Image 1 (cartoon, rainbow, N blue to C red):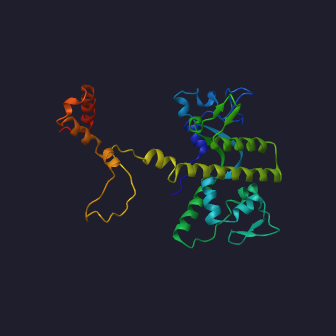
Image 2: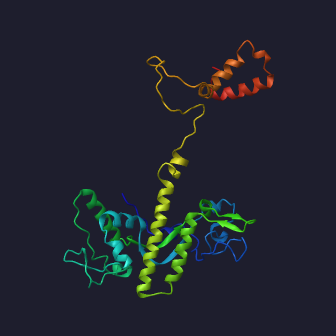
Image 3: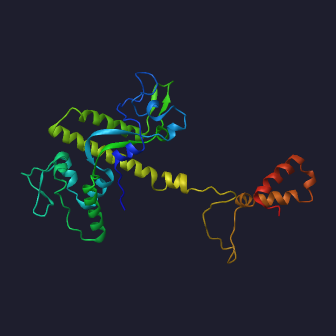
Length: 302
């Protein structure tokens, strides 16, 4: 199921401050955040404040592009001619079924012509139920004016911090912030161009948004992604992990564990045994106190 939200409505309902209009992170040669930039304290809140970790902003792209989630599916499985159309590599026209057909004399080339013809465009008849479901979803997005987007939400600077090395006069920028800068730069250029140049820059914006989408997707998915790493990862006390290997000396139904791992696994039991051994009187009282405090949390004294 693909879910796309109306960004204008989201910005208004959540009262997002902005837009971010400057690609500069700092004012001149200082390390003070630019008031209209991607790290702005006026927009996102003071550095170190609670508000800064929650506040978001937005960028006006000054053009319409296909929503990156839609573009990813569209260009890979539904209509692979779209990248050629947007890049100006080939020209197209609509055939009798409303589908894109390569045509050297066609008038559909570039983002503007796609926008003009989007309500006439039809995708190839579905050959599978899943493809048909996706196509119908796309038609629904076109009807609801969600197929294209002209704004981009900017997440809190807390999740894309800038590392400043004043002694080396260097700044390390997060990959996400770097892509945001590219978007702002292109958006600024799009303000003053028209015609074919506008289409070229719109396609560049589409490619930057594609990069941004891939970065976010890889950041939250897979083994090293935020979901598995920060949300699904668990730390368990007194546990161990090792490689299973055969041992012909072991009987059926038994398993051998290295001594070092046993110490970690049975630490509470070992401490309990030491405290109750005949030699416990030789142990300093401080150890007894600390150990009882430790064991009470493990409910092994019962």
